Image 1: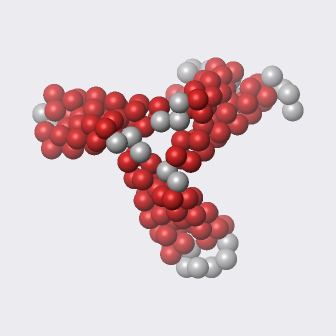
Image 2: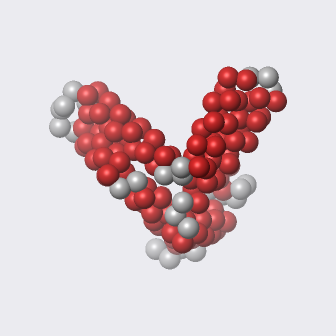
Length: 144
């Protein structure tokens, strides 16, 4: 049982509906993810500060404010992360043809695409959520 299913068995309709609705909302308002993450970073920063960890609190607070002021910066951060992760996977694969090399190359390509067009990340996340929501509902209602 996963915390994502809200206490329902894996594949329950609640998670499917939540993912489907969230995906649609993200498609309608693509930058909502960036704002939600910015708010979460600010709240996290405040939590760190109130807990006495000033350094982490100030860093999280500054990052949250920066993401709220320039929401697309988050997409660039994710793009850079995907590029570094992809390069690491390709290098770790030893350039031997196989699944690790393919996954690394795809991750690297996605990182480059996000850097060239940062808005695509939000749409991609939305589409993945919608597909996952539909598949979970289809599985629950035994549509296939």
